[in-house]
Length: 332
Image (tube, rainbow, N blue to C red; front, top):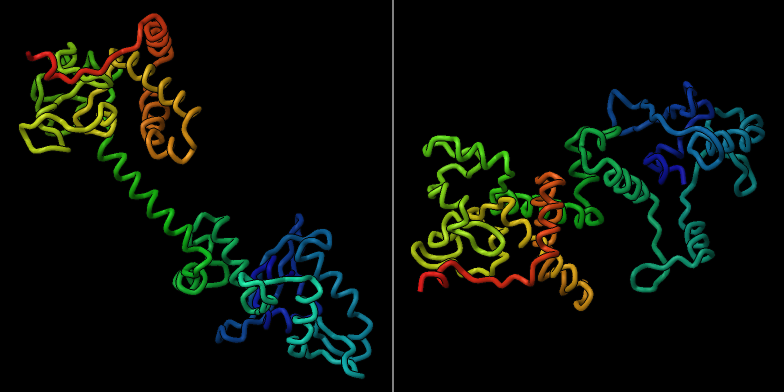
């Protein structure tokens, strides 16, 4: 328990002295211990919680109290002084047989249903893995009692933490994709700035975007969920060809431009997406609509003011279902 709570090595715990608790203050205390592998800096201190028997400090106080009589008879300064095999000793012997009895008594099994092979030296890694999760992988907070390099290589790079690392990489890649593919959102104030700016300077638009801004904002380049600044220069098709993606692909496209005029369509589509959750399994719904739902509800709508959203909701409620038609349908 002490190793799991503090991360102290088993060998360091075995050699604790009876006066190992130092500087108690405000519910905390320092444990002084010897780390023999740290040449020229063997004696170290670790600050831990101090209170009842469920805290490291409280547990050590109980051990000091329980071993006081044996320590007095043996004239020893070691904390763990006890009676074993007919004599008093302050040397903690190997505990393989005791561990097996304890594992059997508690019915502990491994992943294959066999009795768990309890390795006390791995308790430290269990503690370190829990501390890694708690610190969010911030190595300078995680590296307690180690250099950053040792903490990362010996305790951060372990199988138990691999899912966290893989999820972090996947999240970072998704963030990069989100930034690269998100549409341009123009509030009414931003539209005024765009129209007032010279044609060579288009605030709010991606750098290098060439489009007829007045026509775009007037609705002449509208698709259903957005205005399109380049329907025939889609990142999803060869230049000159019509954009091939579904209409909600505009929300994942750098050519997409969202203005207040598109809010009713976005809200109508969002209602449809929410309704689909009632008829699809959660996995199917997430695969089909999870990203677009997050894009609309968490990234686009919050950028508009509440009056703009309220007006769009009222307009959506008063209109019949909207039908999607691509721009080329109006060219005939």
